[in-house]
Image 1 (cartoon, rainbow, N blue to C red):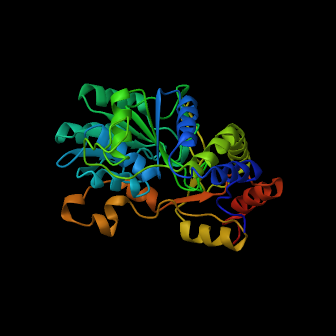
Image 2: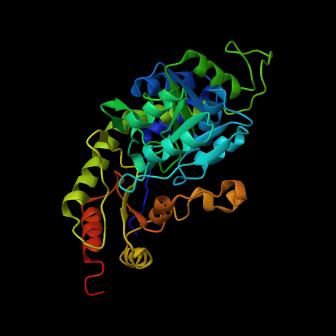
Length: 363
């Protein structure tokens, strides 16, 4: 089976981790600081705050922006549940707007309708599958209503919007380094921002509420969201490889764009303003069950991200989370992601293309 993801971890990562282990300094330390500096430079932001995972990056970033109990944050219903969970974990409430049927990201018109109808305190957009959201339009809404704009970049390492790296456009950007992402630290996350006050607040919240100089004075209620030197050592080596990873992902996606030809399957749409990072190459079909079974039968490890909208999840089934998001609900019934990662061989790519093209043709 051609896997949907295949992390590229090798000798450089192993040697860096070994160095950390032999140093005895395995928790938060100088490797974390170096990784923060390198990743914030990659994102063209002034500050980076490493965290234990992508969810804690969102959580600490939201807290640093002052989001908390009683606040309302407009976000997408079509994402991994962590996007909305992080909002709830601050004590705030997610308010779901619908998505654009072409990009699967937040529809600015739907966001504008939500903001016009109710009091909200922030906008959190997700760059789903590695495709940047419409940050110009969302930024205009945020500016008009004096709202912070949070970028969930968990799937979009290296994506750009109008030439700017994602994470550098809004007030904060939040990344995940889970093993299936475009680069990994095993588990890990990062908050990037140009705002010193937000960076210091995020670092304090993720370090038990300590001030920037540390010690045992705790100036706020905090949590332990720290990254380890072990994870950061892996991240430093992965970041060096990320440009090549992105080149390969985009080349594989270009092959699919050019060579997949099947009227039953709708390929991804990429606006001219965006450079896609292709965390996933996601297609649509109204014959999804048959399509997924066919792919698996022919050795293509396709997967559904995500089969159910967040507001339809059992954890969100209270009446207060009942929203009408018909586009998101339709998309959730039709999407299938096919392997696009850098570890694909030429044979793998040809197999994927041939299999997708053959679906529903006499079968």
